[in-house]
Image 1 (cartoon, rainbow, N blue to C red):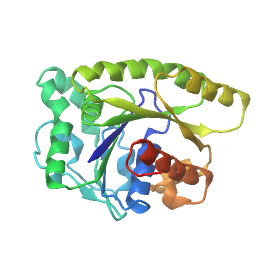
Image 2 (image 1 turned 45 degrees about the vertical axis):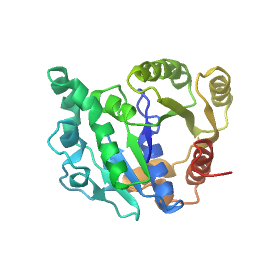
Image 3 (image 1 turned 180 degrees about the vertical axis):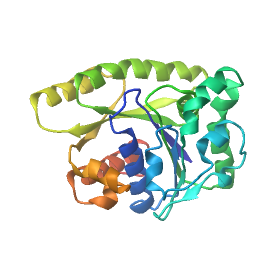
Length: 258
C-alpha cells in the first residue's frame, strides 16, 4: 500500500484541496481503493463527509481504538473511505508531552501495517496540519513519501528548504522517507509568480512537479459545496490540472508505466 503525507507548515497553500482531489482521482479515474486520513484538527478534509459524530483519528493516536475498521467511514465516492478528524487533535501535543510520545508517533504506521496485512487499501493519503505536530510526525513516519503543496510566492518558496531539512531529520526514525515532490498551487500568469516558480525549480532541494495547478474560483466554491473540485466542476482548469498531476505522480512513483 502506497502512503503519501501532504505536508507544509504554512497554512492556506492547498494541502486539503490537494489531498481530497488526489484521493478522488485515484478512486474514480484509477479505480484504486483509497483511504483519506484527516490529521488536521481543523478537520477541513472531513467536511466531505455528512455531518455527524465520528471516533476520528484522535482515538487511534490516543490508543482508544486499536482496529482501523472501527474508524473508517465510507464516503459517497465509490472506492474512497476516510478516517475523519475532530478538534481533539489540538490537545494531542499537550497530552503526548506528558505521556508516551513514541506510541503516538508509531500509531499510524502500525495501522498501515495492519491494513497491508489485510490488503484493505491500495493507497493511503494523509492531510496534515500546518505544523509539525504529533499527528503530523506520526503521519510522515507512516508514509513512503511527502508531497509539499506551495503557493508561488516568496514566503512559500523560501520556506520549503527548512521544511525539507526537517523531513530529512526524521530519516533516523524512517530511513526510506523521501520528498516525492513540490506541487505549485494557484498558479497564474504574472512576473512574480513565474519568478517564484523558476526559483523553486532551480534552487529547491526536492523535485518540483512539471504540472502546476492553476488558480480558479471553482476551488473555493467546491469547498463551500463540501466536495472535491473534480466533482463540483470537472472541466475547470484546476480539476484538469489535478488529473494531469496525478498522472505525472503515478509515473514518477512507479505506480504505472508511461
